[in-house]
Length: 470
Ligand SMILES: Cc1ncc(COP(=O)(O)O)c(C=O)c1O
Ligand SMILES: N[C@@H](CCOP(=O)(O)O)C(=O)O
Image (cartoon, rainbow, N blue to C red):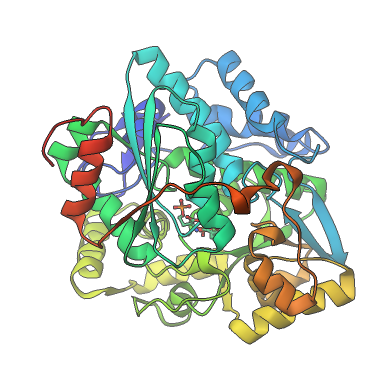
């Protein structure tokens, strides 16, 4: 499988090179040259299989040129062996025709572990085979950062720098990033928003001298490997509910658009999905885009689901590329407009193509709190605020409700104990492996929202950059 950039001006790469590249050198995102498909028989054969077996079948076609099958299988088995639930991603029925897919049973209690645990193994494998090292830079609104730090903390081949928005993540999220004492891990609190952090990470990739000197690699969902690992749980859940003989819908709490895009990839590969619902909090740029055809950024409002406090959803570019029939020149034009004026208008055909696969809805703060309370009262289910946004939207999306609806639960309620306690009176405890999190020593560098200050810090601190000027 070869990978092409959504902006059409970067080299075509193998899986291994796309894995290490992160952002394409033209500023675009890598996507597979063609979409592999699974036949109905192949999909039916996944029903009832352990999570790792489903992962092997779904991921193999995307990596075949770069990773020997036996090595892939071992990495997948190892990645999911550490999850706290034997099903890895259990499906819990909470109402007739409604299921919650719990994706938070990995080490850092959020769905990011599902992809990150595998990504770290894949990167170590490729770097090891090349005798190479890398400097990972990542932006986080709370969960990607902790998942990446956990996954790479023992890796000798990488240094990890995670940028998060100062004072805009939950205390549990912050401490998960700042209390890891590994010498290769660096948490940076940026005085700005997640969008500022993400823009800085992309700017570092677009600063080619810096990128090459430090051998930058990315762990955000700009990295294709993150998406492909997330495609797996759509197959896992849908086949458990009768696919391919039965159609299902998914409702996905959405921020950077990686998770719901993975659902779209599953559909492209042959999984019968009736509807993919994009659930947003008050930062509803994606819901507005689907309604109006205009993608328009506004100021970010802090919410009780902070991981979704995002305006610039990186992976929307991948969908746009497909909706425009892979017209990279138009992608470049629209992304240029976004960079210059903070907005672009979708061509009508692209808007229609997107509307054929996706619906969207938003939940404001009172609705989110009410939904946490109602899920607990009606079903005895304790939902975190991100999951609650999706549960609230699940009621609103008509088309989606005609078939079994799977709501993705992306974080453990204990990651957001204040919001959960305020709605239910119950304070969810952290699991035993994190019981002392609140007393561990924190290590963090606070930096201004300024690219040169961040680049200078990374240059000084990274093993590949030591002593060099930014
Ligand atoms: C808990 C949680 N839910 C949902 C999301 C949204 O996922 P995505 O960015 O893939 O749209 C995020 C982060 O982005 C998250 O951390
Ligand atoms: N909510 C995310 C934001 C970054 O998303 P990613 O999927 O692109 O890494 C987070 O928790 O950091």
